[in-house]
Amino acid sequence: MSKGGGTPSTVNTQVEPPSYAKPFLEYGLSQAKDQYTSSAPNYYPNSTVVGFAPETSMALDMVRDNALDPNGMTAQTANVVRQNLMGTNPLMNAAFQPAINQVMSQFAKAGRYGSGANQQALATALAPISYQAQQQAISQAPQAENMAAQQLAGVGAAREGQSQAELQAQIDKFNFEQNKDAAKLAAYMGLVGGGTVGSNTIQPVARNSAASALGGALGGAQLGKNAGFDPMMGAIGGGLLGLF
Image 1: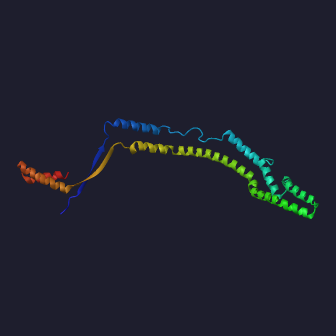
Image 2: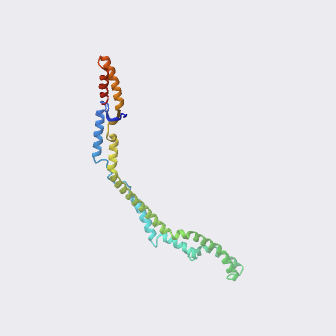
Image 3: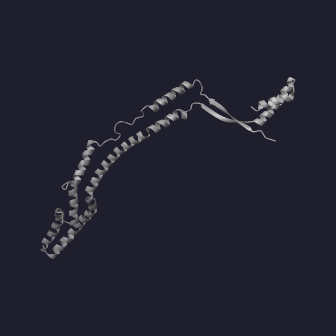
């Protein structure tokens, strides 16, 4: 005893957009194609980086020149700090003078001017002033010693930042050109819905031949009976039709 098998077939279903929408869809597709095939979009043709103002360029040059000038303010400041640190600053005598006058006057009145006690008192009076100047020089020395280098580094950093901005602008333009076609294609495919408007679907449909034949035979037998001829002949005919 054999069992009936299914006979595969397909059904093609196509869904069209409404007729009133077709002109708009066709126009949109046409515009999408025109945009895709055109040269647009284009990168901004001019520089996207703001250059240094003349005053900024002048200021950077002045800072650089001062840092490199051995007679400039930066070098002189560092030299004074070194003198204060070593105790060789000629201006120290002016700072010491009030204390010197006071001590020498006291010992002169006492008739002991130039004595050992006089010299010891003078050293004692000048020591705090010298110590304070030296301590200030010690605290200022690192900054004074590196002042020129820091100024040059600031000028270099400003110009490096400008160069980096200009380079980044060139990279951005390069990347824009590299990705332009891909971006346009993605936009185009998005506008046209992936290439489809409406849908066209093919689906397989399986028919059970045995069941169709049985249903056809029963229907044929009934029809033959109602028509007044042999029901067996109607069943055979109906069964054969059910196979197709």
